[in-house]
Image 1 (cartoon, rainbow, N blue to C red):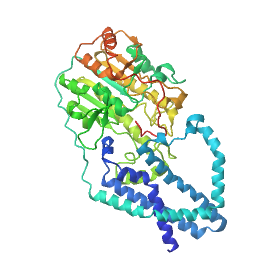
Image 2: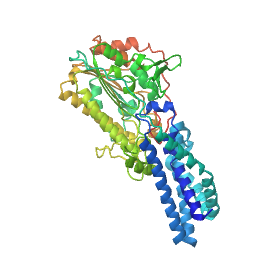
Image 3: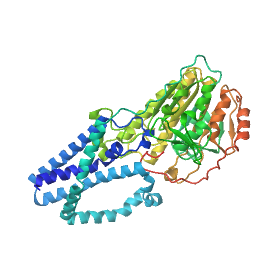
Image 4: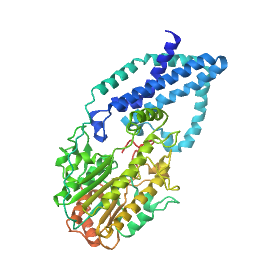
Length: 534
């Protein structure tokens, strides 16, 4: 085989492997994966991926031709040695693909958990030096083996090309056709509830072991005016089970079938029914003749309960598949840049995923502001994307310009959570709705990486109930599951609960009715390094 042709084919195979994560997201997603997608890949996605791969292969081939023509001897040997760093690109894409499919908790080094990142790197330094020495001394042999391996994997290029072109030619549009929104009912409701769920909001780090330098005046003010629980447990440690349990008052989880007839299943697996036949707080509120507003993220609320809500908006979890851009040219550039990025880290500042999370934060807050300010909505349900990673807020600048933030960014996300509380309260006060509205603020689960944050963990989530009017604040010290919240909201909306003693008495009567056992106060096995798991 002529040397230029061999080089071209080798570069094409390397480019194809470098786009493994892109191909996994475009070609290898399963029907059940569609459940959490706001849209499935379109022809622009496939054509952009093919273009990006060809551009990368062409760039690599051009570099190889230049090096062979103008560099010889020791200079060529140095360039060849540093070219081995290109292996980091397919390794990164392989890591990301495996993490998205199987959860990164299985790919994390135990040393990171025991001695920390810096100590692990220090201990790994001798091994890194040995690898570099071996690569320098035996680079000709390594280069030959790499070329042979890439040429052996060349048939996969034809496979990905064929699959991408087939998917483009057989695209049939978006499969999701949500139910029309419920028509808006006239009148102003006699009772009004705003139920806020902040994703991964931790009770301990907010009120007990608040990090030094972190101020949360809005949360403190709300707590001083509310019935506040000290031992509130979320229904589950993951959003997939916690949110359906919260909105139904039963221990359920979402089941994604990839079709429109998504279903709910009991945690014990005893029953599975379509979501349009699962009683929720939304169907209950609609049955009372109330308008319902819903703003959420991660879970496809507007495909599930649209027929019971007047206003609905949701955003999917940011990932590499939905964060590269909207147009063909944006996708080409975004896919190329994603080769040297992870979900959290980028050499170019904020990664594509982090930028998309910034947009989600801004848009969800705008929609939440509109919902809480609407006097015609009797129930407003907010599942908000803070303080969950990616952490995009910089509390020192007051802007969402944080970049390359790991678990320590949770401090800034707590500050952003407080900003959300402040803004939403101000909106209701400006419309004269604050004193007319019962506000419930809680979380779907605590901060699951708190052990990596400060070495501690507990299972409590914030739970505050601010009633309409000027109720007496109180502390509730007994343990209970927040799965009771939907029934509590129903009781507030129908007028059977309106005072602090009403709430305290209701909690005392109902807190032991849950069929689930309270969870142990031990840290779960939590993923790290990206926002994929929920």
